[in-house]
Amino acid sequence: EADIYQTPRYLVIGTGKKITLECSQTMGHDKMYWYQQDPGMELHLIHYSYGVNSTEKGDLSSESTVSRIRTEHFPLTLESARPSHTSQYLCASSELAGNTGELFFGEGSRLTVL
Amino acid sequence: TQLLEQSPQFLSIQEGENLTVYCNSSSVFSSLQWYRQEPGEGPVLLVTVVTGGEVKKLKRLTFQFGDARKDSSLHITAAQPGDTGLYLCAGVAWDSNYQLIWGAGTKLIIKP
Image 1 (cartoon, rainbow over the protein chains, first blue to last red):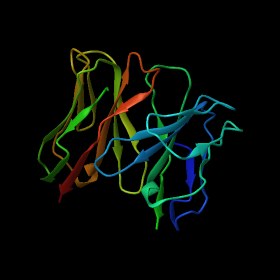
Image 2 (cartoon, rainbow over the protein chains, first blue to last red; image 1 turned 90 degrees about the vertical axis):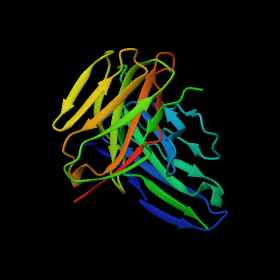
Image 3 (tube, rainbow over the protein chains, first blue to last red; image 1 turned 45 degrees about the horizontal axis):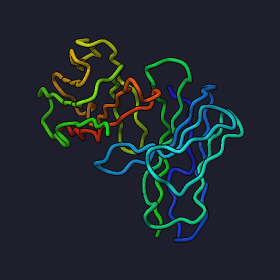
């Protein structure tokens, strides 16, 4: 069973608010990811990290930012939320070594911006 | 752009029937994974296939990787309501630095 946790699970906020989605894993994985998931669409990678102090943007342009100060923690921040940010956000982690890229996912954070 | 196309997008069948879900691409993958995602949960890995022509079985689920490593299929025998979920395929391309390329998923509903 994966040990990766996301909070909050659900969030409804107004336009312009700053939000942080939390993600923590206890597996000691070096790589962590943030994906955006919308119905009928493939998962889009918005940020990833190879380890502490490493952050990279994914293939989907995003106005969010991430930080990786500790191995186990990879929060995602939206400085000013807009209705277009409404989506499901999935955090995942994997081991750095190996070529199969197996991911362990959290349960997701469903964000609704009014 | 590398794409993984999954078909069908949606499938609703009766308990006990068989079904096959497809994942196709024009790109070659070093490995391909299948995940299942239930409502309100994150995707969970079912299987990884790494060798062209490989067949793996997981109880009533049979996964096959194409000989050319461009496609994969998932066959479910005697589907059960517990098989209901979103099935996602994801491939690791040779030159993608191990980043996964995702399909859009097949939403499967098994009616009792």
